[in-house]
Amino acid sequence: MKSPAIQLKDFHDQFKKAASKNLTDEPFVFEEMATISMHFDQHSIQSVMYKHDPEYLVLGYTRTMMGFLFFQSEPENIAMIGLGGGSLAKYCAKYLPDTHFTAVEINAQVIALREKFSIPNDSASFRVLHANGADYVADKSDKVDVLLIDGFDENGHSAKLCSAGFYDNCYSKLSDRGVMVVNLLASDVKFGTYTARIRESFEDRVVVVDAEENGNRIAFAFKGVDYPISKEILLDSVRSLEPKHPIPLHTTAKKILQRLSKHASHSELEQMFGAGL
Image (cartoon, rainbow, N blue to C red; front, side, top):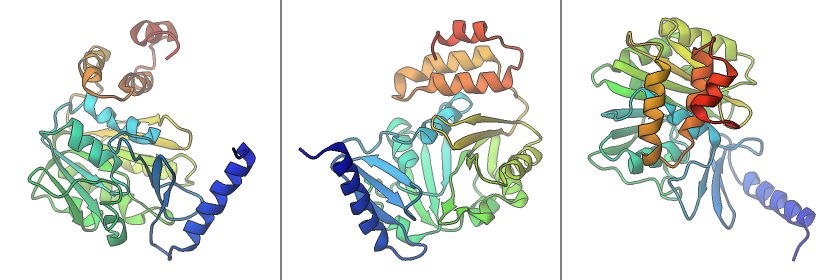
């Protein structure tokens, strides 16, 4: 058996070999025995999938983004800007089977990998569009209940997917009581600018929480007057949703409540969610 140090070196050698084959702006795939991942460069991960369980949300930020369920537990329509390896798309297709899901992806090379990442074929309730996400939200002909914004390229946040006009269009694209969820990089020098734009577009009905892993922060932005959500409704949502979803929704609920309820004491939170959470 190889030592851990040799195994790690083998991993890095294989990863660099895979990365060296990709062209600028094109994703590449790296496979191990149990996982397959998508990358644009050697420094960041676009998506990860367990081969034995394609619908499992491996990356913590995707699990945090599913917090939209507290506000839209049974959405009729979800649109996601940025397909990647389709982690959220696959999860929603499996656990929200009555929801119509549209994934919008600008990069044809990413879409070409959909079979590699076990992304379902297009159907009456699921589709992948090769289109610009900014153009998609600018079209107000079809409203959606949930917008998931996870659009990155080789340079980080796509400029067209974080402008003030883009967030204004997202607001208009949502149905009444709709929710937008945005994956943001905490280290981005424009993080404050992006969150300020979201707050402006959504009339400050926004809560931003840390994702499960370091480096990502998730913004939940709401359309409608029933904001902020009460802790009673949030707790009821946790109790009803957790038996149906194999992800730690209580973790996200606690973070949201901590941000919304500035006066909630630590002991109150422990009583509601359990010590050690």
